[in-house]
Length: 311
Image 1 (cartoon, rainbow, N blue to C red):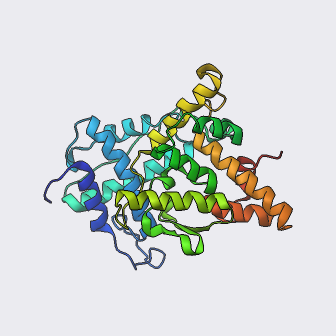
Image 2: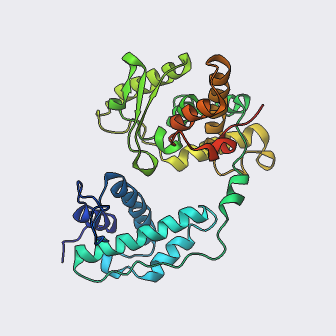
Image 3: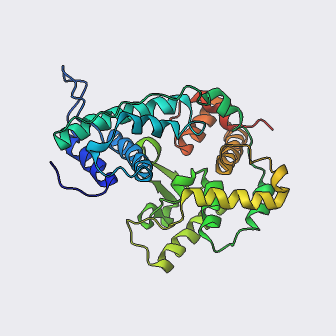
């Protein structure tokens, strides 16, 4: 039996024990369900494990061998209405994988099978309430209610300038910023994917310069995130500010999944129309560039209506 540590540590150890980079699951006749084949799979499993560990802590579960299928089902139920049906199924699959890895790690059968909630919000329903692109006037007004020296203020400006997810704004490290050639490296974001973004506006270069200076003043180490604010804190700061702009009962962005997603839509729409107008690119070419900058693949044409507002 492996030594202890908190539940998150134990889950991470189980994942690392099963991580076998270089082996190809496609070339193996018998698939090994207690093996993690790629870096992206390992990162995705750790993301889910970290989230699962937070839930288990509230249930006072301290050991892998004490986790039950009921814990797993209740964890998924706690996500009800917050994630799509597709994501819910992904979580279920990852829990099963974590159970097999934990069994191998502890030499004890760990059953992490879970029941899917029956009344989870459908993906199509959720996407209908994620359609509003934030007006720049609304963002400017809301930022006036947030301390300009606060990390929430910096994170929101980064999101608007580069179309970043809130989780990406809070994970930028000093080593990710190259002011000399106006380059920003997004390290292992959603799905374990990384990408490089380039400054094509003075505002992008300005906010990146301010972020780098902020990190230098804090003495942030090269491999550590510059901003230490939590993702939820950024979203809450934005919603509080928007409530002050509109009034809590009339805030049009409160019904949307997150205000930051509305900011990403504004960036995507502006960038798309700029590429169409000034670069003379086709719709497919322009959105391919935008999609990649947002952290998706260039051929995600299904996301066009999700991100682009025809104005």
